[in-house]
Image (cartoon, rainbow, N blue to C red; front, side, top):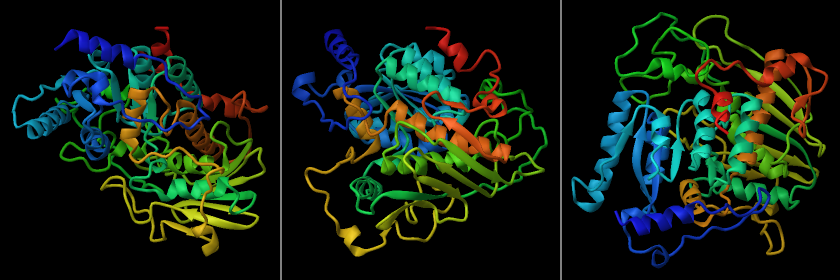
Length: 467
């Protein structure tokens, strides 16, 4: 490798990220003439952390298709999945070059070892939800740029820690809120621009429809597969006996059981909720704040391994006067209701991955009148961040040091609204929230749920001790 070229690339990627969270800047790719020839050393070097369902169906394909980056390392606690990911990436680059030795992908069983590799510029984190916050913080401290799947955190305190440290370290950041990018769902930005520019008048209600997950799951203890580092997979969560229904399938990449256990995931309230609440915030212009009050209830399974919520109803009030209502009976999507009409937006029948639940049969985009649907956004009106491709938007941000479609604070606020909803569902009563101080008002019980005990040697608390 030409050390001079690599030094120049590394120095460039370490420059500060331009643009505050509230400023939308259109990134452009720096011409190859600036960075030199089309050599691998001049491409963004990516490490893929987590090689399961989302990585295989979304994040690895999303990065591999862009030639300004190279996936040079993979990491997973399951050596079987790790081997498949390594082979897949090497095959991809061999096919592009015609050389079977085009790239030898480094493989790691521990993300902390991957982060020590100074040749890696950025990481894509596609792990289970309870393994999001800690590697994001560790990556920021290691000077890596970060793409992470949603939700950002498992707790309110974790989310604040992540937003603060990633912003302080000025890392290029993107969370997997793909509904902000025009491919494959341009209707979300269009709907939010209509709402932000007053086409439906003053917004008073936002309906958010989300699915539910089934109860069940075997509680029988199984032997831990030799290919799985189960002790580390549990991370900071409580010790628990191994069961395939607790972790992920060993034979395929179908929907894993951990999505239905609240030690590792809060359920659909964050699973789909962090997508749709992000859109609700985008349309209401509340991306950097949160609700001031929440009241909800839900049904929770009484037997079986899978214990995330079933049917639910939540109402959250915002300081702008709007009320967000989240209910599994609503059509999956987001409906903005204003004084002069309404706009509904969803993915239609599209799925992000093959094993995702159905999203409904409604139109992907609808409004109360054809006039709203046909309305043009003028040059002097609000134009939201335009991103044709979510992964490319992140890669462009790495190169230009301008913000991507999402920021750490935006990601935290969309996730934290869902976590507040989860807390009110668990309590089954109203809570009042201070979105500035990020505490519940006069409510010790609710405030105790802002964080969880973190079992050594893992967790964000220990990662932050390195500062």
